[in-house]
Image (spheres, rainbow, N blue to C red):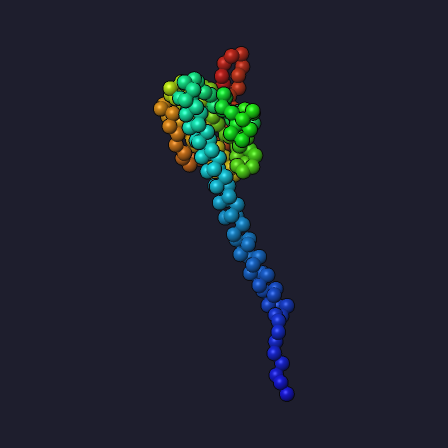
Length: 172
């Protein structure tokens, strides 16, 4: 008589494998979410830095002033007098709170303005910074007096810094 061979897994073995997979998934999920948030804020900061460099190059090429206007309340910025590369008939507007970034524009400060202006020689009229946030991760894009930008990791501010104008006076 032939010995019976087992051809499958018992219910207890399948339950153990499912439990191990669940535990590994529960341990990995927060790390994956944090890595995704870091990647999104890094991408948004690189996009802001690249668009600032684009505005500077366009100012030099046209020998005319170019402005990057940051709208902190709506998490977006506009490159004035620069056509959108994908839709040349439209203004160049970047909505940071949309995919793929889903970032918050926490602060944009250039002197007492939320505008970065390059003159016709590509020189910035006022140095400053832009702070972006995704989750608990923040990046600062700093623009120096020559118009060069750098990205650094910073502590996240507690809230947005939105300039409020009352009778012609800026208050932060």
